[in-house]
Every structure is written in structure tokens, then in C-alpha cells.
Image 1 (spheres, one colour):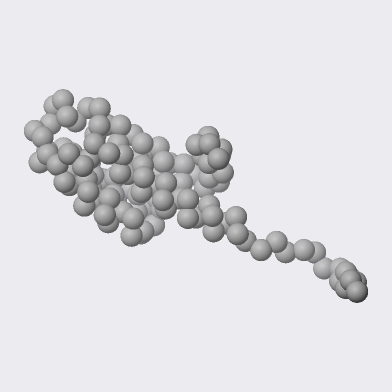
Image 2 (spheres, rainbow, N blue to C red; image 1 turned 60 degrees about the vertical axis):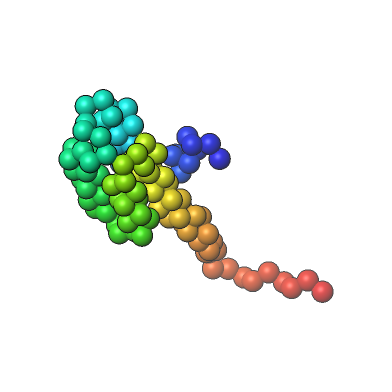
Amino acid sequence: MSFLDYFKSLKEPEHRLAWAVAIAADALQIAAFPFFAEGGLSPADSLLDLIVAYVMIRLLGWHWAFLPTLAAELIPGADLFPTWTAAVWFVTRQKVKARSKDVEILPPGPAPEPRR
């Protein structure tokens, strides 16, 4: 399944918005913050991580994947990996899988004859 197919399978607007926020936050941390921040202990970087964590919890609900992600973002240099995007993928992947395993309910009607 390609990323585009996976993104199209997300029916809830909250999931799509969470993906957009995560990708934007990771892109900002990887591309922009190293140029104007004070390094690993940047207050702007930490503030961005706290805001993104709050937004993710509001959009997707509490999930344990957000806790190690927030901890990894506070480690200098570890924020160069797209941890928010990985966490959102993990959380939404589980929800899409759970939805696809739903049992199909058939309309009422006569039961098929058993084969002998």
C-alpha cells in the first residue's frame, strides 16, 4: 500500500489533520530550527513539541506512542528523526486496521442449506 493509498483510507478529518500537523512539525524541526535555534536545549523547539503533543492528544486521543515520542524530541539531536510523523502513523495505522477487521453483517434472510 502506497502512502497516497494509506492517506486516502483515512476517513476521519482528525486523522488527516494530525498527519498534516506531524509532517509540518517534523519538517520545521529538521529544516528550520537547526539554523536559528540555540541547539539541543532550544526553548522554541521544546515549545513546538509541547504544542504538537497537545494537538495530537486533542485530535487522536491519548495514546502511549505519544509519550516516548515527546521524550525523544527532548533529547538533543533525536529530533532530526521524524518522530511525530512516526507516532501518528503508528496510532492511525492501528485504527485503520481495527476498522478493516469489522465483521460484515448480512441482511436477514433464509440461511443457506448445509452441504452434505
